[in-house]
Length: 184
Image (cartoon, rainbow, N blue to C red; front, top):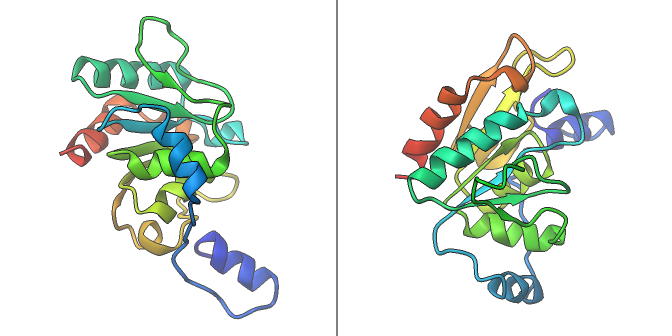
């Protein structure tokens, strides 16, 4: 049925809506993120959704973070609980330590957002942050795009897909191949 906005509009018996998402970040959230002292350039990562069928294999997140660290690119992990737990891999862990609006501001500042189909991916779309989003088969949907706006149009985003199984089975090299060019 298209992105979530269109699907929800249709399910409510309303005319289909296709507007771009927007998020309004208040000054207090901006100041709270200023106080974190984040690097000037970093990759924001969100690895865990509310449905394990959407998640990527956690050891692959660690491998990706390790590769970025080897290139001197800091990783800021967001969400409720970290997926990158190897103490040898340098990650700025903001899991469970930011409000949703602070998370939106962190994502807005990121060079690239990398994540699964989740609320933070929608925040990346709403803040205009370049994204790499991992999508696997989900329920009856082999290939889907739950976004409106830029991501819905396939702009400013690279979808790394597994249309024949869960996102967990997406190969690490495919994610790195999508991410590294996005970093410029």
